[in-house]
Image 1: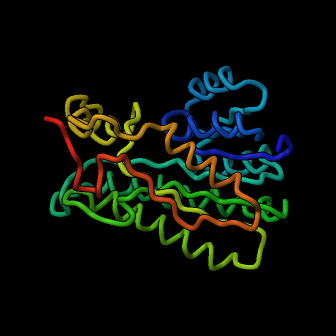
Image 2: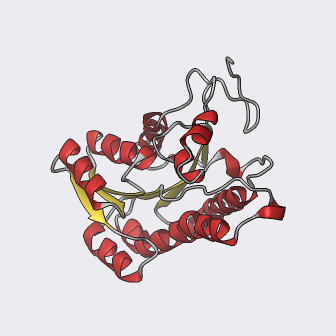
Length: 248
């Protein structure tokens, strides 16, 4: 396992940060990718020499070329970069919010996957993980922009699996439900802490980043003939995107 390399995008915080840490603990050499250098440096200091921090904007062509060089013959790609912005109904939707979500979640996943697929296939045992959301499988009012992006990621995972059948690359979609991380809801609501906290109000135990990272680590360490198509993970308190038990 020590010779296997994994690339994790969106590794500066939340699920990406936890996934990079857990894959390193599982024996992978990890290339941690994000825009914020200082957060990646903190992660590298925590994990040690098994992790290479790579400041990178996955929407920039030159940065992607550098990622391909640093990643080398990587075995695993975890497409985690993304995010939500706003919760307006369609009639009040903001172009910039939708553009951000499509660029970050959909085009970012496509661009990194396209760039690293030759290396993944070259190893003879490649693995692509797309971290989507239950928002890519069900909807709620006010979530149309995020749903559109996450449904697109889910469609990408299914299509990619069809396109790669018979070739040595597995494809898994990991779709978390409610995950309490330090930045997701805060970023969605433009830094409004009170509104962000209401998302988790009364929920005794939402998922945390390490829960999802554990699922990702489990998927990519299955025997090479085993493909987990879709892994949906929610806290016990959540039945679906709108049905959550709250002690209020």
